[in-house]
Length: 410
Ligand SMILES: Cc1ncc(COP(=O)(O)O)c(C=O)c1O
Image (cartoon, rainbow, N blue to C red; front, side, top):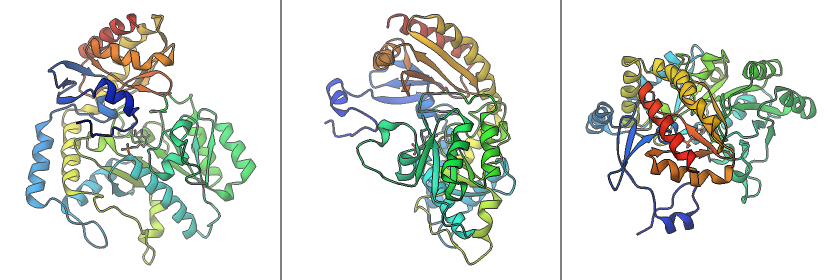
């Protein structure tokens, strides 16, 4: 019938060519409606960290749904499973004593962080600190604050100004942040948002020392330092760390998360808030008038707990760490191909094969499919490679071979 309006799509083109319909998943592979098998190069949209088809998660959700599907986490209401998950996330969070507010996804987490940053400064008697600073190439989801904050111009075009109090600095230059602070004054800046690795903007690793430098600049100028770990969180950053904030010792004021929290089995995000920012709202008498009906949904919480169990039991943090070297080794030779400009690897299970001609991105995805790979382009012709943590070394080799065969035909 063609009724489905896809996200981020030229619907005229999709209608003309027909959708790519995925009907089943198993481990690191997916299957289309014609029964064709594909290696999943991207783990969906960077989320299926434990792999597809884990019945353990499905069973945990089914059990929860038949116990009580959901009720409320507003006011003094709470669910046992949601309390348990909050404690579990706080226990692995890089800042001790953190509080956890649940959302439905990454965009919710980012916009919640933005609002909380502004409320925090009002509580501190500094209502003039309203500006949120983001970076070029950055992606922070598609709600109002995230759209305004991000640095992918096409995504913000065609609306006029959504949120005026935002500024953008170069993604790879800590001095640019310093320059902005000197120009407009730290007394006007509420927060700086940073993705540890630029994800949807094209998969760019941070320059050496960059993250620590911007952390220090934020500290020195009393600007909240908010790390967007929607992609990197829950192990994807490698190094055996749950979060990039731990791997790089960032001690952020807030961390935004989603995807890997449930491995995408059901929607859920979490905003992890440091004691410094949470304290005024836990002291009594002051609320953060914010929350979502389905924030901390029981079924999502049950899925997240089962997902974290699997990650711990199967040492999947080590799996993501192993992928760091596996991907570097297997993908690096692709840089020799005429159609490839460079290969970006080196941090956990986040990497990309950069096409020499970004205009060939759609053609490359078509070729990948012909060779049994489900792929996706980020930024300007960067073919994202971010598999599930359960992808074996042999499968990474198979993935690289299929990439090579596809890209040679481009
Ligand atoms: C860094 C980052 N922040 C936020 C988001 C938004 O997450 P969601 O699509 O779950 O709303 C994404 C999604 O890819 C992301 O990569």
